[in-house]
Image 1 (tube, rainbow, N blue to C red):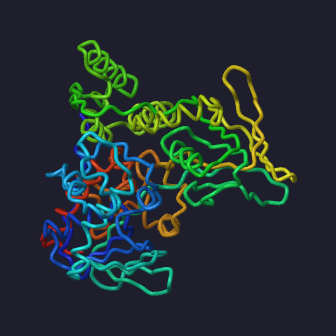
Image 2 (spheres, rainbow, N blue to C red; image 1 turned 45 degrees about the vertical axis):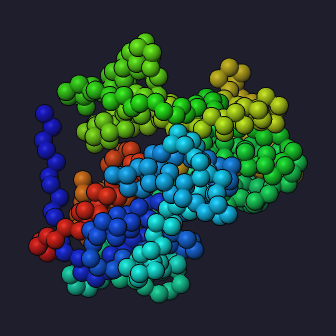
Length: 475
């Protein structure tokens, strides 16, 4: 039996404003839980450069044809009322935005931008009351202030914000960078972050998209909507499109045996496969088993050995993503139409070399499983490999600075940052910061299931309760 992990010390009472760094979904959900549930009496400051809170990349850059991959009836921000988003849609004014969604059913997949508007609107009353303050800036450094447990955040405009407690809610990491050989060192046409690429690429440009998951689908549909005429190629290890979502399926709780963490990844996979086959044999759907894995996998992940976690990431992550992160049927139909028309070509293989020649073109070599090295020549490359879970690849200047100074440590298996069970950040030297917390994708190493709204809303509610505690332990 594994020894119980040492319990983290209780956080001290608040001293000064609570500072949330990052105003995407994670930061917004935490702010709502703190204020709507009155879990925290003091003022809350949320530092976020975007004009509206709650949007982030996922909802702020989404267009009307980019759909949620979770049914509307399960997307409410309140863990006790997941249907709140659906109720909000049904109350839209007849002449206002999203009026056409007033008759939305619980199993519908609606635009992500609608959810962004919903999430932002839930914070508007607190902004109007002055209980929530939105500071439009980006944090570039964070240091302990002299005294008892306070922090000073340096912003990109040179000013500072002070917080008695600080929560890092920085969202998803960037994709792992693509290495490109270039004689002049310049690589125009390579877009590491597809959402920051020009809104309209040259209509006849040949495009290579690295990755064939949900981000690729969003980008290809956007290109089609913008009238793109050039050939589009998409490359991933298996060259497979995401699998379709099915609404209305019951979650089938997955029963893991006692001592499941000692089975190893192979043993766990065998156990889960057996349950999925049994569900299908009984007339059900394997998706019910995958959806029922959310809670068990969150509890099991911290118990797995480090070698098992890394083995999972190295060998099974693409398969997991395929089964876990599925696509609304209407989006899949759109992509299949483009593929069948020849506008989109899928390639299965491993990227081996990318060189940008003096002709301005990218000369790509990838390893095809059957035919060996194969070439592609394109005008533009878009990196849609998805968020890289490894914390060392961060493009966030604040997080990079904290890693460099040793104020944060890599989480288990190199994922995100290290935290306690209460979400308190650990330094590179193993120190527990009682007043510095992390939430959302940043704690993937500790929790694994922490990137989808149903997971983040639960974690945000729990962290809000922790932050609202009135402990007597000093900082």
